[in-house]
Image (cartoon, rainbow, N blue to C red; front, side, top):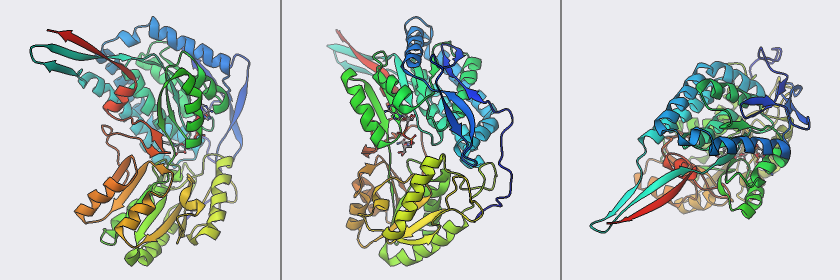
Length: 492
Ligand code: NAD
């Protein structure tokens, strides 16, 4: 379904026409004056220019962060004091959620209702880590009569945070909150397609009482600003979220410095539907799983594996429901799929849609939705009968496109689920308790949801296996990543 396309493109009031870096408590241009252009995904027109950080800008940001780490109060504050600041950040994010959502939706093309949900998740990430650092107790180990050993956790230094353009503000918060809660100082390099919402952090942090130099932001291209951050000798750890190919480059560039790395990378996650599943619930959830957030979601269930005895019924009902998903302008509250982030990404997704016509049976969508002759709009697209060696089965499309494949046995379902290079998430639908647990155990994925949508519990590990990542964050694992753990041994 498509919403009326006659609206004039929405443009939020008070948009800046220029975005700068934020270094040592000040907004600054690039030292050499370099900029890049940012488009909105509905008109694909440039609506602002952003400072394009180069090596010298990254050097300045890292130097400020280093000074704040070595001389400033932040790493030395009690966890409770930092926690109070983080709660104020969460309050401010919540109080600005509507504006954040408006800007995020305009800049990224996400449906406004979903952008609002992501703004609230960002606030929750700050609350969660604010509470966790206060609740945390240090490990102690006793050898009766001989030794007491305990663990000191220490912030590491300047954390380099590199983030993607999908749900950008929320994903930035997922790194900023634990990095800051544990007493590090940071340099954030947000994605170049979507710098708008990130430009709000500076004001939020300053108002919440984060000292100057603790939070720094350098805009720019990955190959320039991101590269300089990864290679900077005074940045001992990099938390990266993005494509697996970029992760490989960063891994190699960080190697000479032996940096701490956390990598949350791409996915091609399976949803496995057995014949005994609650099909109504499975269809609703697998529709949501790949079409929410425009399909631009790392954990999207973009391959659906369905047991053959219910396959035809599933495909027919799924396709019918996919055709009812409302494509519309991102700012329209009825919209369920908005505009893809950028014309380059649109072309990539449309390339897969074309390819899918020869690799599968098109049962829904297949191109631009009716009524949207311009802008990065793609109709929710469903291919059935997709073979496991098809590129649309193997490769991350990162858009509203799904491949459905039949299976006959539990063993075949697991084999198909594991037959890709990725291993981020998996979804399993069955009412057989034993099978649910056994299949989950056998699937190569960092996270499995059983009879459930992708619902996060921030205490659990988040991360992927195989080409989907390195290391896990979430709960105490994030605290582990952002701290050194020093063992102190006392002989009695
Ligand atoms: P991307 O890899 O193109 O870019 C991510 C970030 O890395 C951007 O800020 C970019 O500027 C920067 N970058 C690019 N090249 C760099 C380099 N050589 N050195 C340093 N930085 C560099 O990814 P994207 O297209 O922005 O995001 C989409 C991808 O992110 C998808 O593959 C998606 O699955 C993945 N993702 C994963 C998770 C997860 O948690 N596993 C979450 C969200 C997105």
